[in-house]
Image 1 (spheres, helix red, strand yellow):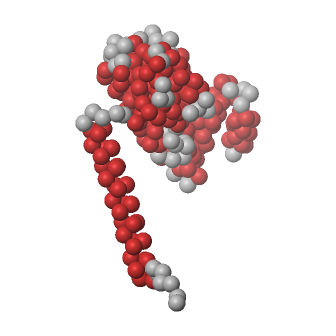
Image 2: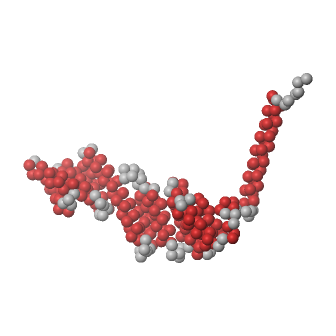
Image 3: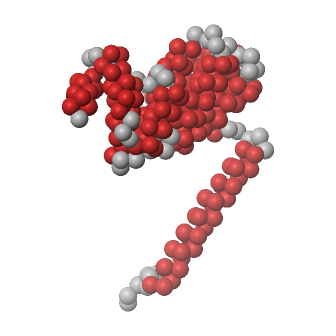
Length: 280
């Protein structure tokens, strides 16, 4: 006699019941964990770091964060720093930990983490405005925008933000030891804006829209006097003015290229343009 065994629809029905029960248990466990955290239950971050963390001093815990940061294990480093800050918020080491939390986000470097980094640096300044590290936090706020700058031929919103923030940092902390770095980054950002204007002006020259090109280049010279490609700007100004028939003014700019930038590639071009203007 053949022995009966559960199969077919009945077996499938039982399997479905088991799967549903398992899902319910998982969801219930997750909800209970969230409720426990909300009501002051154990924080997962402490268990994730080290089960023996309570035996370490705060200095040892901070050092572990430093080791993880040096190893570019940013999330794990952030866990150590977060433990320090949450448990010792008024301690000097707790303040350093908050700054380090921001540093871990900054080091990760993607768009989402950079936004979080900027928020954390601002939080540090708001909480500890008199800190010796406030200048660093303010510099890093500017560096977030600096990291997000687009190429010169694209939108320059983040570049303008960087210029404003570096300027604020320099104005607020004029004697900071970080001032040289802020000055350099500010000049880089200013050059990016100037390059953008230069690209637009050259576009106008190619389109023979010489008045628009002259206006753009004059604005560039006035707004960005330290632009690193002034030799090219003066040459392009001469070209645009010559295109308008303003030969006397054009000649002055070609002569400036030769006298102020004798080793520039544009010096030879300017000489040729002057020779052409003499024979024209």
